[in-house]
Image (cartoon, rainbow, N blue to C red):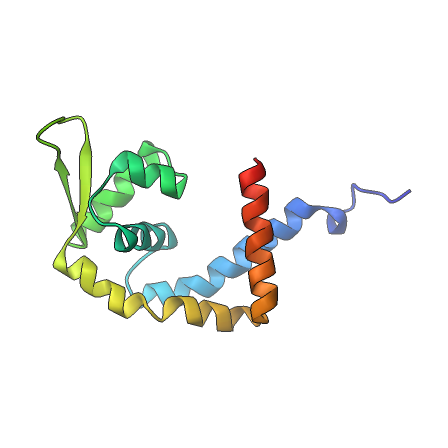
Length: 140
C-alpha cells in the first residue's frame, strides 16, 4: 500500500504550488496595468457586464463583501470605476466602469495570451486543466 502522507502524493500541495506559480506569471503583467490579480478579475467581470451590484460581483468572484468592498474602493481611487447607491434601495451599491476603466480593457487584452504562453502548455492540456478545475469547483 502506498504512503499517502508523502508530500508528493498530495493533490492539495500540487494545486498550492500551481496556484503560486501561475500568480507569479500574472504579477509582472498586471503590474504594467497597475492592477493586482483580485483587481484584474473584478475588472474582467465588469468588462463582461457593467453596472453590477456589489452582491452580484461577490457571487461571481466568490468573494465576501468584507474582501470586495476595500478592493472596490481601491479601484475607485484609481478612477477605474464608480460606486453609487440605487435610488430604489439605498442598501444596494451599484458598480459602474468609468471611461478610464473601459479604456483599460484594451490594454488588458494581451494578458490571457501572455499567461498562456508563460505556462508553456499545449492548448489541449490547458483546456483539460480548466475543465477539470471547473469540475472540482462545481462538485464542491
